[in-house]
Length: 115
Image (cartoon, helix red, strand yellow):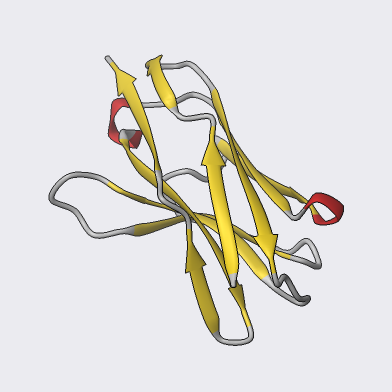
């Protein structure tokens, strides 16, 4: 079993920054992929960014150039640095870990960007 614990969400003004962390524990194997998804009220969950254990990254179009994903493999922790935040970034952000064809999810952390 894998457990994911997110932290770092909160309320920030437009133009500000936040850093999310996701700590994974349990039966972690490599290769794997860790990522961040978000879901706003009334909308589908969408990819924000993901990163493989080898360091390859992918970003959603709406966050390219503003968000940066990174990870510390020794700590099984992924980070999402979010800069130049916009009100439309307001959502619940979920951490995910994919390995051996199975996806695990965290409980989510709220990010609210005020205008």
